[in-house]
Amino acid sequence: MEITVQHTDKSRISEINFDKLEFGRVFSDHMLEMVYRDGKWSDPVIKPYGPISFEPSLHALHYGQSVFEGMKAYYSDENTINLFRLEDHHRRLNNSARRLSMPEISEEAFIRGLEELMKTDYKWVPKKYGHALYLRPFMFASEQYIAAKAAAEYRYYVITSPVAAYYSEGFNPVKLTTTENYVRAVRGGTGEAKAAGNYGGSFLPARNAQTKGYTQVLWLDAIEQKYVEEVGTMNIFFLIGDKLITPHLGGTVLPGITRRSVIAIAKEWGVEVEERRISIDEVFDAHKSGVLKEVFGAGTAAVISPVGLIHHKGDTITLNQNEIGPFAKKMFDRVTGIQYGKLEDKFGWTHPVAVGSEVLQ
Ligand code: COI
Image 1: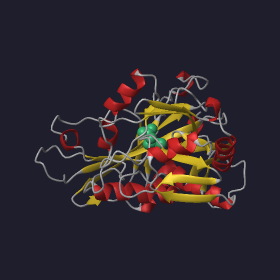
Image 2: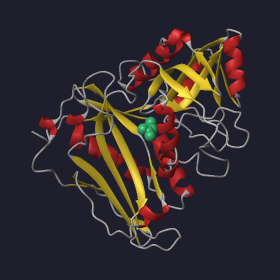
Image 3: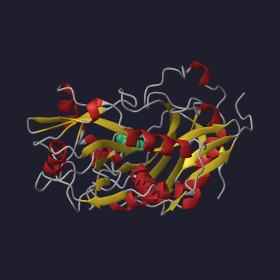
Image 4: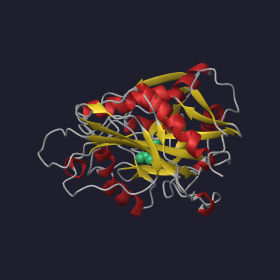
């Protein structure tokens, strides 16, 4: 496999205010592209970030064969950028692709492509602790053909965006509400895939929640509307007594990579972790009896995000006086410490990329 790099003539980096980053608004100088045609993927090409052009018959626009990943590159030191749990992201991308009847990509193309993109655009990785270069690998059906069946052509891209915190609250607690009117996923559907349509379908309920002052929807299961599933932009954890409880995956919950990392770290600390069904009533009852210590979300974009309030059917609980809980704080410090290369990586999760080759002046 050969990776071709076509450098931009003019970097846009001097136009970016790294002290005022909005999630996903600006993009680095380059992007990676691969084309799937006649049953095989081309080698990756890194080229200047810019428009891609298709006819209105682009298959993905009509039928939603489109999946993505969310990852981050962390500034470790002037010669090193850390990527995180690359093999897990690669596996999840291929699982999503399989569910949407799309072709898988090789681990070599995924990993070497990201490494090369980092070597090309490493100057875009923000230096400030807590900020990162968000990596968005995505794949879509690029055939110009509107028959309702799996396409024969696909594109895979990676674009990257320097980011600060995902929620406008920063690391401050977010407010969640359940909804009775909508569901996110049913078993056998696409809920456990990182399919573009899962997100599109959540925007109306999320907007309704936001007009009422909540940050996001806390999704319940689609059948009984009783069991907590996830937040759509992150997985969810409950610290009840001394146990850390998170909804089991069960086919409807996104298998979050930060979720897995939190579980591994908590177990290493000797905390009992339960992955099981947890009803919203159990959460509210635990709060009433005083044993619900903390609630927090976990995701690549959200990192560890404390939850300060949950609303469900007219009842509201406030958690930890709407302050960041000590467990969430300790978890945030440990996860980010590993990601930024400040703490020992006992688990072997970080993937350092040696940069500093002065590609961009
Ligand atoms: C991520 O955490 O990377 C995600 O994909 C969530 C998102 C939709 C921003």
